[in-house]
Length: 483
Image (cartoon, rainbow, N blue to C red; front, side, top):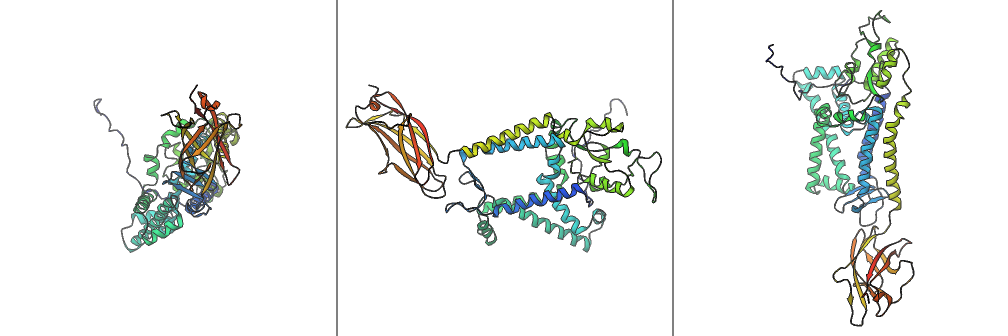
């Protein structure tokens, strides 16, 4: 090739080669089954857990009430002005991802990512219908006949059922789940519900059934970001090539071959990988750190009487010592180190702050805004009146009566002070369930009293729930004539 000629650049996208992971058993596979069952169980069941929320709201433990911009989680209720709780949870999620990646690589991707969880479920169905790896490969190469058509249609129907259940469970979080289920079955649900379920069904069907590892490789940004979260102390899955090479086959009855490493080139690690990569080729962007290759390799080592750990979790810092025949550092020393402890401290600090803020927040939410135009009004009898707008949010699930009172900043009553609520005959007002009540409030000072003659006087407004001992206060200002 001449100096003026240039090689064609590699393609940015490679056509998908179907991946058929082989069934494997072991500690990591068991952990993945347990976590998958737990997460799917929570996802599908949570909307149907009941929780008494009074007559005005669905009795649902977990509810995203978008119409009223509120979030309910068992006894916790988050209102729109408390969005900082949601922001804090999102920050905690990000720091948690940094923490786990710094300690053990892409364990989120391998065990808890929704794409991984649903792909595992779809592969389980595929294996149940079509058989294990070799049977599925043969079926792929087989011409379309009655057997192949039957198996494919059966598999796709089961995938579709799972996808519909996934989309249906998603919409149940936004309204009363039992009622919505009835409306969906009888065709009475809102078109938005059907549209959302359709979109979720199609994406789940496509991503879990056909795209699979392509989503992780091309659509997800995390494989490209994770490098910034990892260092030489991060535990990653690696092949100990100094022990396994040179690899070679073993004949039946042989225990070892002189000059040959422990790897017998059985390709078990490659056959079980859901990403279709060979971990023996080194660290690769596609690896999701699921540990299935460890299970497969350990099983093979047991069969040939070799020590486990040819493939396993390892930090790059330990590589040189292991090559020399030494022992790696204790796994906990890689996890509990300065970097991960900083992430954990930040994560825990935000979590503690949110819990403290959650339990210290006021049971009564209100604010008062003075009317600035005019600052005060002089009545016919000389009374000086200030006008305020009181906004009072009833967080209870039933009608609640609140009492309004005004005192000085020292907590003592003020001479000649009168409080009135527009349209009310007393100092109480009733708010409907989950209502933000806007009420005109008047504070009046009798003629020739110190409050009426002063320029500005600080007051304290108290709001008391007459049905309980809850009461809160805030400071406001009364404008007098300034004489």
